[in-house]
Structures are given as C-alpha cells and as structure tokens.
Image (cartoon, rainbow, N blue to C red; front, top):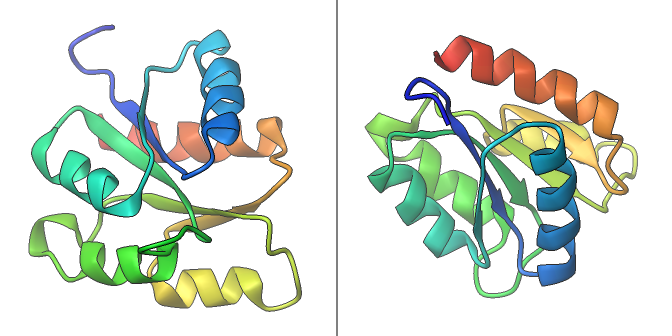
Length: 128
C-alpha cells in the first residue's frame, strides 16, 4: 500500500457479507479494513487517519446505521467523512432516508460492484 492510499472500512454484522465484499474489493486493488459492529467502526475512523471511506450496513443489532451516522456526524472531525449507506432496504424513499440521516451516498444490496467502484473512486480520489 502506498502511503497516500486510503483504506475502505466495511462495517457489517454479517461475516459472510464482510468476506464476500472484502474479497471482491481486494481483488480490485483496494485496501480493506473491517468491523463487525458500528461502535468498533466509529472508533476505527476516529483513530486511523488511513481510512478514507466507510461502507456502513444500515441494519445491525445494538447500533444500526442510522444511530451510527448520528454519532459520526456529531463529531466535528467526522462531519465530512464519507460514509456510504449499504442496505438491503431498497424501497422507494430508503435512499433519501439514508441521505437525510447523514450518509454521503447509498447503495442497495445485492451490491452492483461497478456502481460501488465508481462511488469509491470518487470519494477516495477526493481524500488524497
């Protein structure tokens, strides 16, 4: 990894989702970090300056993505940190709900990897 390269943090409580998404992203040349819950993910982006973007599952036990976004956006240092809402909820209005909650962008499961790659490249190139 080059010193300017930013990692992608995947936050999801389902290890199968983390495994599959990590595998695909790594095969496309991305550096990937993972967290199995929102609290750990929030701590990781607060403590690691090499994390460039968070892919946040919106439906997790203990703390869901909406609660996590509220905490993230409540910290001055993370107000503009890119957080992509990742959810199986793809009903009309869900995208807008995620964006209103503070997500930078939104992608529905099953994930269209070409669409996700475009989103990642846009935010990661801005973070350099």
